[in-house]
Structures are given as C-alpha cells and as structure tokens.
Length: 327
Image (cartoon, rainbow, N blue to C red; front, side, top):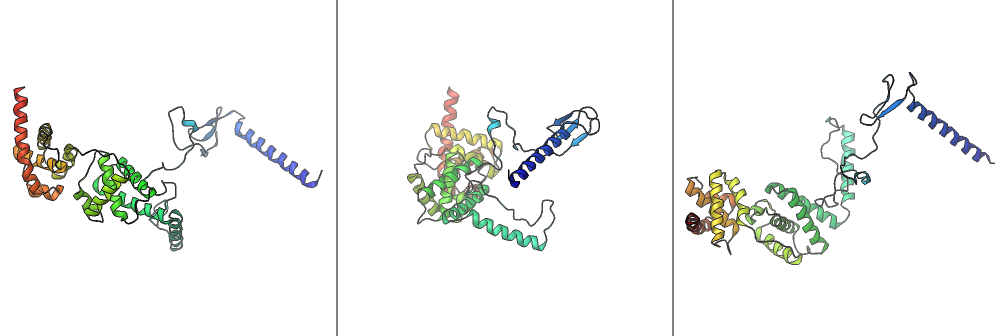
C-alpha cells in the first residue's frame, strides 16, 4: 500500500473520531453527564437534568416559511415570489439606492465607490439585451402609472402579462413603449372591473391620449383580449370619492343609474359620462353643492356631456320611482 493511501485512511479515521467525539459531546452534558435535549424552537441543546445550555444560536437550515398543507415539506424555495411585474420575474438581486449599512450608518467614501460599481455591474447583468431593457423600462412605467391611479396589484400583474405578450409576439416595432404600456394598463383595468377614463390615464402617462387609444385598439385586436363593456356603476365609486360627495348623494346616484339601465339609456353612451351625470343629478336632489365645472375638472367628463345626460336620467328615475310605487 502506498504512502498516499495510508495517509488518506488515517485522515478518514481521524475525521470519524472527531465526528463521534463531537456527537458524544452534543448528547451528554459536560457538567453532570446527563442527557441533552434539542430545543428546535430556540436552536439550543439543553441538559434535561441540570438545565445547562450547551449549544445556543444554532443555525436553522430549514425553509423560511411555514406551511399548513400536506405538500409543505416538499417545497424548498427561498426568496421573494416570482412576479410578472419584473423584467426577470423577480429572480435577480436588487441593490438598494441608499448609501447606508444594515444599521443605518453612513458608508465611508471607499465603500460608497465600491457600492456604485456594484450597482453599475448589477444593472448591466440584469439588462443584457434590448428586450430586457425594453421590459424593464415598460414595467417601471406601469408601476408609476398604477401607483398614481391607485390600481391594485392583480391589475398590475395582468398589465405586465399583456405587455409581455405584446413583446413576445413582436407587436412593438413602430410604436412607443410608453403608449403600449399605458394601453396594457388600461386594458388590465377594464378586465379587473376597475376602469379609469382615458383622461385619467392622460394625466399620468408620458404620451397623449390619441397614441394610447390607437395602441389599445391594436393590442385588443392582435391579442384577442376579452374585455366586456364597462358598467357605469364601476365609475361611480371612484368619481364619488374624488368629488367628496355625501353618502346620501352616492346612494341616490346608484339608484338613478339603476333606473337608467332599466330604461336602457346607457346603451351606446359613455359609461363614465352616465356615472358623472348621475352624481350631478343626485347632488341636485340632495342639495349637495357639486357643479358641472367641478365634475369636469375632477373626472374629465365634459360639462356638456353632463348637461345633455342628467335631465334624461332624472326623467328615467321619476318613471322608475313611479313604477316601483305602483307595484
């Protein structure tokens, strides 16, 4: 047998001896030779006889989550969940913009320089080609506009999926990223029952409403998006909140909308205009001081539209009330 083989065997024996010695030290108390108990919740080895804590602050190598179903033990994921709102679906590392350590202390000049270099290289590695840079810029615009409009997270996820589909099917050449991103968010808001007017999107988008409307028609046609016509009641709650009307006015406006739908006055008309006119009509009945100019500036619905609609709504509401009373 060669010297190399003998040395390897002796090394293995010494390692096994050290491991068995360490194992015996973990199972026997060094003070009273009592039995040790492993406290998983606190990460400690404690003697059951004298209470001595032999090992403390043990590292937990298990998952960071708890699961209450039968398949929980098979899951071994770590990190943030996968999301469509990131160009890489959230699988890359994000370096914060603050030049502070974990304790909130300012970094030194050399560490700040090193951190800036790390941010630069991280930016290069996470945006390798034009497609990833396109998605990164578009999803940043989606988050900015959705936050300004108060749209929920599921709506943002759907908008990211729509835009990613447009990129995969090569629908972006010849069109601006901002217009396609705004159109994707508009379509997602319609699908989730939280629509916003084009005027509202025009106030947060970096492009005019005409390119956004063209991009929306193009997206809905090419991707076969199933988008139902919006209900005027979907605009009622956000309009009433922005205008600050009373609960009585909002309730009456909802009843006026029900009367208008029963008379089929909403067919072929703008749902946002019908909702704004219903709020104005309800305000006149409840003496809630809300003017046409205020509604125009707040909701983006023209005061001429309100003026042409609210009389029809009041007439329909009067007929609806009379019918309900006769029943």
